[in-house]
Length: 209
Image (cartoon, rainbow, N blue to C red):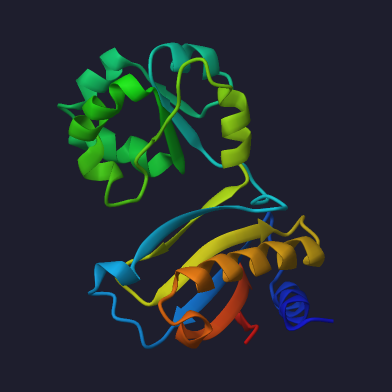
């Protein structure tokens, strides 16, 4: 049994049963890294082999794209709505915080930058440009298996790696992929990793290494 599987099992055992489906989180604490240097910070999107355990919330910005994808997205904004939002910063923040990812028609990207960029940018949520004729359903399905991994102000990375319904093996596979991707982004690779822990939403962190 691997160290990852042992930690997942212990995290499950030490977490009390809740009346909701708990997420499983990965916590990576870093060392010897200067986050004042922009080259040491990053926002990385990783598609997990076994999914997140729950669907992501996807917002769509566009005219044709919104109409075509309204049944698949969690939130849609057409061009007229986008213009309205320019005057309502509070509403912009609420929309941006409620969605994990955004996709948008390329023709509106400049307008999105002016209207929503001040909120989307710092959160690493600028939309992916998608032509109206693209298969938005497939794109949304892919985003439903994707997580965003951020390293910004503090030397800690925390992200969802699944939930209780996934098997230990599935969660381990997700964790291995994330660690591999994160290690590649770090200036000194493995040497920058201090500790790796796993936890359930309401449980205590369990050390993997």
